[in-house]
Length: 102
Image 1 (cartoon, rainbow, N blue to C red):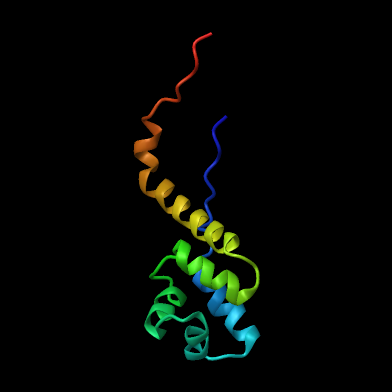
Image 2 (tube, helix red, strand yellow):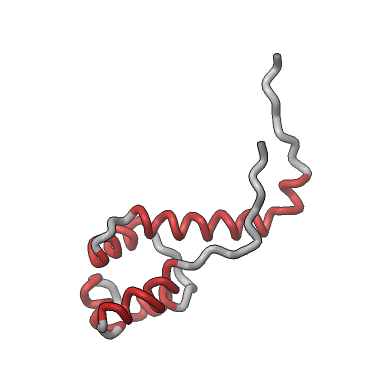
């Protein structure tokens, strides 16, 4: 059974950090970057949604937020998969779905 592609682009994890996490903590971006032990520039790229959450960053965010790395990777994976499906939609339509011989 083929899955329907969502028309809504999944939220970038950086938007969650920018809109929810950092304001809720009441800290500056510089303080968050320092706590994460990354550069302020790297955090800005994530917050501006121009850099993805890597597994290493997910481990840092999971520790910092106390919710584990998996949630951060799942959010990034959902976004990456959605973008790939959008980019390849026309090409994918041309690929047949293989069926096992009876």
